[in-house]
Image (spheres, one colour):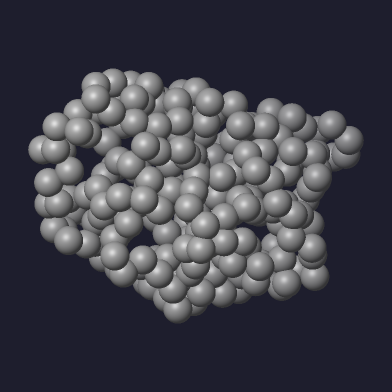
Length: 227
């Protein structure tokens, strides 16, 4: 098999845990770095992928994603590339606390941002996320054609592009996203067409139980979602 019919796998990884003691929804803000646990998660995934045919590693420009991607690139002797299209989704609540039990939904000043969950009204439109993420995936596929690529991004854009590829509605319950910290959502291309989507959690044992996909929200522990 060769040429335009090559199989190429693009692994889209969510970054590891972030040091965020104040529970801020940090969004695209700078200077949010991996915690020590987050660095362990990044190393775990680098070990998991060490034997794979990875020829291209690319990351969101945000520090937490760059720090997650670095050990993967290093393990394969590759330079780390950056693609702005892999960045976190824009959100009007960036820089604030917004989560279970903090009263954010009861504040009148927030109501105008919550009127349309289908777009959504509080942040970057889902369709815009699809367009930029598909562009980033296609670029990674072209860079690693016939091999494997790793793209490090963020929970919401990863879930949205997966939902689009799997032909699900884009609006959803954030608590039901299957995109745990340091997880891999893997898109297999035959030529230029996606033929399958896989999901794995190489660092699952390191992820706090309340942050696993489908876990019941815990008051005071679930503020900085959408990372």
